[in-house]
Length: 177
Image (cartoon, rainbow, N blue to C red; front, side, top):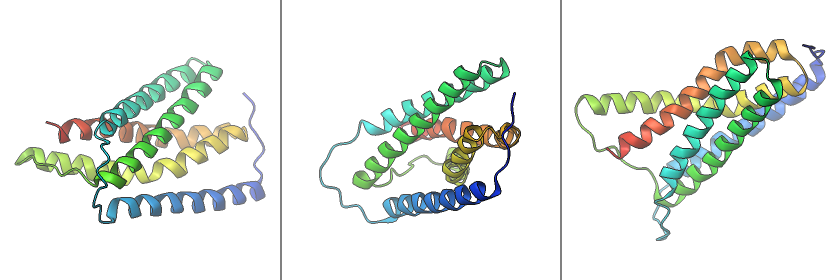
């Protein structure tokens, strides 16, 4: 497998653009989630279920992509990882759309389950903030054929992205239990 040459200038440009885009995305998400929502009567109650399906599908693509690269099926790996990213992007649009109209869904559980829910939610939120910049970095490393850096990053990032996708589905079910 070939390894691309590291270009410090291109890397610096990418990291600046990635930082700006990721910061803007995080700020926009915070704005949508933290503002007061009065609701305009639009019924988007179907979106949480669709978002759970998108998260589950993304998780499946991540696992299958990992299996594909372990089997050296590079084209299948590439297709599955791009699909996982696209599914996550569509999820994010649906998530923001739903929350911009309906606001947050309060958790009504009590006792130990409440503690479990908030532990999952907090870890999910914190790790989800890494998905955009790390996914873009992973794609950048693959695009520039910096496969050693791509592998090194994804040993840490893949489990994080998978955790965010799976816990998104878990959160959906906990809110509806």
